Image 1 (cartoon, helix red, strand yellow):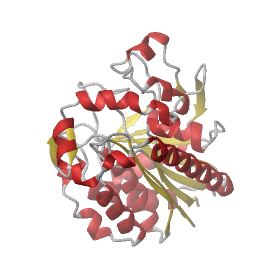
Image 2 (cartoon, rainbow, N blue to C red):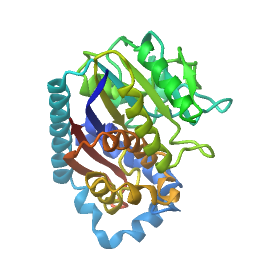
Image 3 (spheres, rainbow, N blue to C red):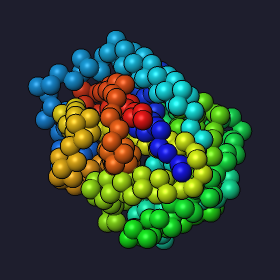
Amino acid sequence: MATITLGMATAHGPQITLTPDLWDLRVEADRQNPDHWFRGKRYNFDDLAALRRSENLGEKASPAAKQKHYERCNAAVAEMRRVYAEAKPDAAIIFGNDQAEIFTDANIPALAVYWGETIANIAKTPERLAKMGKGIAPAEASYCPPGGAVYPGSPDLGRHLIEHLVAGNFDVAQLQTFPVGPRGSNSVPHAYGFIYRRIMNDDVIPNVPVLINTHNPPNRPSAGRCIDLGRAMAKAVASWRPAAKIALIASGGMTHFAIDESFDRMLLDAMAADDDARLRQIDESLFASGGTSEIKSWMAVYGAMSEIGARMTLVDYVPCYRSEAGTGNAMGFIYWRT
């Protein structure tokens, strides 16, 4: 029977890729964004800066602080890559989300499992790169190799997961090809590209992308439902016949675009303590930010690793501030070994 030998969860924000001198490119977008969610409430940039003035976040966004945070993030990615290589999994189940990359308003499933033979990572055209927001296009190097790539799927494992989940009362959309999304491509979303490039180091093993709708209301699964998904996944892997070593990997998070260290620390402490009840009690308003909601992919991996009794290891937590309003991306890196 198959066994889960590794669980991982990693942030994938552009600030891991972009040198600190480029972080200010995103501050301009932050200033223009009227919808910064912080602790369940919405603020514009100026109001958020006023609210958080006593935190002296400008110091945490100084050039020296940003350089230190950039170096810590990349050291953490290197450690995650080392742990992954040491585990030598035969196949992976990767939890991530779509951000209008393949799904349109015509159909956004709450949960989808891809079980195709191959997975295309299609390089963006120069025209598409030119339309991306400031500070976004330069980060493409972390999501897609030059010229793109085609990776192996794991259709047998994918079908087994779908059948097991349906039998366990999960309503699962199935995909054997990715649809062409609003941006004119059917490339695998960037959440997965980060894992292929930065964790698997372009040596991609057969894998099953699992897409959780963390971004788009009203059919976003709750944190508890994502934990249940992970527990069901662990049972599905245990019933798969091949004697394979399986890695479960979550991509995305932590709090952004307004960083909330207390919320992030609570999440990390609860997962480390296997405090299932605490995680299930999180008010959904705290996931209102589409970026912060990516943590729900972590909940699935946590659920699976809790199901098999594995203990979490924190590699690092790095709040990458880029402005006095506390905007930026908090980066977390954790794993479980069995």
